[in-house]
Length: 108
Image (cartoon, rainbow, N blue to C red; front, side):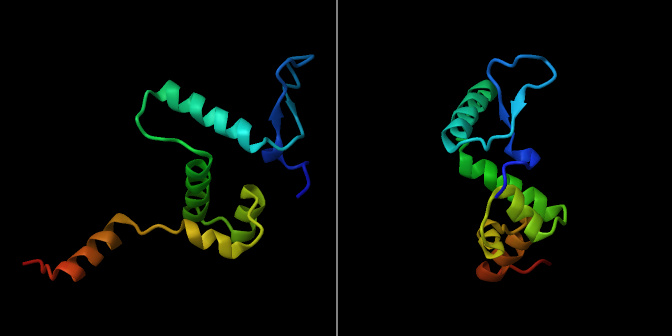
């Protein structure tokens, strides 16, 4: 992928001006991991935030908003659209329906 896309912007720690605080460089895995740790500590949450959880949330939100799979792959860096299938989730109503099928529960 080219590093000219907006989601490949990295923060300049000591910018020369307030106008340009970013550079066109892909953010590395370790940098994202450190950002996630920092955000989690600010939230004071017991929930573990990881690079993968952030990527999963991004893919899920983009899919639910109806974005084309090729666009999602471009943003997330997935090489194949079929990789997005790993992020599919069952919604709460469908989960409940499946539970009723398995348990034999019938509404009265």
